[in-house]
Length: 147
Image (cartoon, rainbow, N blue to C red; front, side, top):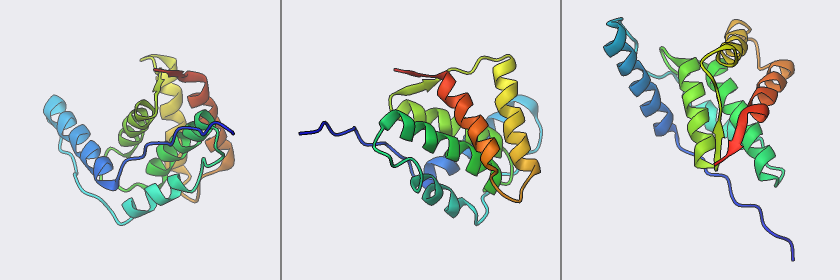
């Protein structure tokens, strides 16, 4: 009898919307800058895409793949009026925590590296390039630890 891998916990669209709203309200409070709170129709593309990947049965590998696509797809699809990269990073970190992992991002170069990768996705809106996804996957896999 083979041991079953624990299932992967996902969240719903409303979680993404609520996370984005909290990020933007905090930004407005801290900076006084105007923010745009709202969603676009692409919000409906995010979770089906994430659910379509990372189904090998190896929990750690599947969690990394889903986290990679969650972060990248939010940046690529631009489902929010503002704060897409921040929402992608924070939602991905929560997804990892919900599944027993933590992403260790320091405030220095490692943080700049992931922001640069996500900026590349935003600049090349034609598609999610395999090379960029591989870079993000490598970044996440080298920085997650079990809780």
